Image (cartoon, rainbow, N blue to C red; front, side, top):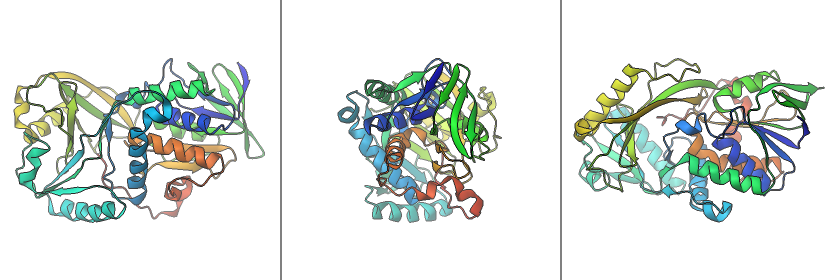
Length: 382
């Protein structure tokens, strides 16, 4: 394969396809997406829990989510393809005094940015999330505009629309190196041949650090394993049941098919590419789930899997030009929020690369922010 392109997108997950869609829509030029696997979305996208929320503690993350939720709602109109954004809401259960202080502050910030956020008393929780234990709960935060989506449906919609608009795709194509001359990218070397280009868009998710190292860039992304369990069919789960997060235990859960999806972030897991299933990890999830929803004692395990978060030191994305070389743009490091931020990330990337003012200010996502040493951390991470 000897090719040329105006831009080469590395990574065929939801971020790469969202970027591809918005770039083709903006008539950026000849775009080639390379994916090392035989299919799209087999990495982090395939393992995502499907949550979509705007309840964050930092202004940029809130605005990214609000823009994404708007784009999720207009997805069929924009792409011509069906994908369900089930706006059942997101609920955070607050028990500890320290968490109460943090979420109260976030509540005020979210409201100031126009987010429709409700602060619920414990006795009001059941009308939104029946069967959830309210023992020890001081209050709950609930946003009805949040909800759930199937990452595969949205990825497929972006892919089909981008292809129709001229996107070229190379599967089974692993990037092995990136050439540069006088500090400018000139060529991408792959397992299937060379691609002449002056622009590389790094959407490699947990592998973004490896791509950056090919041009001498230090991309602050580490791969961290997270694990999920689904149950068999449950008779008591209502169709309006939201995503529920028990902040004190770290457990999150939502309706999945006719059962439930259960997850938890083990903060002791070290960075690695290991996605094997740890039985102790599963047991920890189930113990926390039983405390939150006692009726789950009748549940059977339907499935379980592990996937990778692409984690940055401040749990916020990296979106912007690589400062050490001309011609690399990063869209990575979403720290578990890649699916929910994909539409906004794709749109603002296309706006920046076509010389337009981005819909929201993403200067805080700049790749060189880490060397300053004073980071604004996103603390509402699950």
